[in-house]
Image (tube, rainbow, N blue to C red; front, side, top):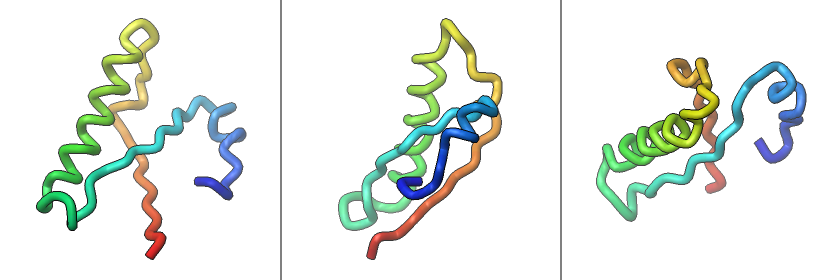
Length: 66
């Protein structure tokens, strides 16, 4: 996302969120899934006053820096 121009996406109503998660060297598999789900939960709780209807759909983009 750092090189991608996100302004057009935001202008179209997309919400951009960066999610950090534990690596496999820090936690066993499924911990990463739990971290992602916790991020979605956080967004839902923080936007209760102004709901984000698209949170029932998500696009996930990943990039490895190794």
